[in-house]
Amino acid sequence: MQIQFLGTGAGMPSKTRNTSALAVKLLEERGTFWLFDCGEATQHQILHTTLKPRKLEKIFITHLHGDHIFGLPGLLSSRSFQGGEELLTIYGPAGLKTWIEQTLQLSQTHLNYPIEFVEVTEGVVFEDDGFVVTAKPLQHVVPCFGYRIEQKPLRGTLQIEKAIALGVPKGPLLGQLKNGSDITLEDGRIVKSSDVTDPPKDGFIVTILGDTRSCENAVLLSENADIVVHESTFDHATEALAANYGHSTNMDAANIAIKAGAKNLLLNHLSARFFPQDIKNMLEEVHEVFENAYIVADFEEYEWQQEKLAPFSQQ
Ligand SMILES: [Zn+2]
Ligand SMILES: [Zn+2]
Image (cartoon, rainbow, N blue to C red; front, side):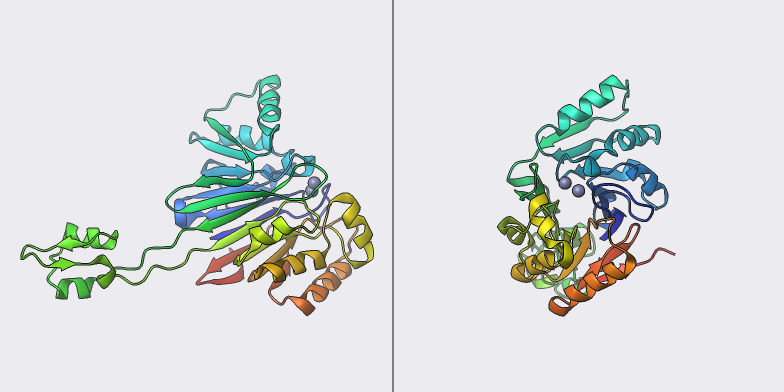
């Protein structure tokens, strides 16, 4: 799994930071990627990456502010032009479906694939064999949600030599053991899957929070998460503004991560008022209380592998 940031700015684009969007790349896990928020020109940002819009499986929208959704109509349209035919599911607050459908209808945009809309309320918004995604409301100036993605435990590897030594013949019985089923041999002996497979491994937990002032639900969503993506619109000097506008400072974000027992913190949604030196200072301040924190930039990618987070470069 990798997380690639496509837009890390707050409110409006600057020359260095586009508006909000990030991709959770699940190419190894499910052959697709999921998008969280879709600020204007997200499709242009995608052109500078290896992401293929036809592999886009799900879009999760945190809230309906323009800097989080104005890129949707163009991206949806281009996905169709680029041969996307698979179902796309869009999760978001009430009103999103109407806005998208009316925009597509008025512009006479016809898509070659079906869209399923899921109106998000508190609770589980998606679950299958591999993942469960839950949402909780945050505290912003409009309804806004945070999402917690939990990968289900991964089946342990089959110890083939051990199975064969116990008399399991090569062939489909090995497959059954690998898939967790116990089997009976011709002589009546039972071989348990758990005896010939490694123990299951924990999956990852990634929490992606929308715009919010510091709140309890941000902590609950982030509990024991491997990675928390949190907004950091303001800093020390501007902290009075954070509460008024329903946003957080760098230190609010750090405190959420600490309270939740999270392992890594990625800070995004930076105001264009900050110069590089301000950002360096913001990060240093966070590092005094929470070591595994990064302030992210557009196109940066972070890889989760062997239970560790590492900045990841494609070239
Ligand atoms: Zn925003
Ligand atoms: Zn907002």
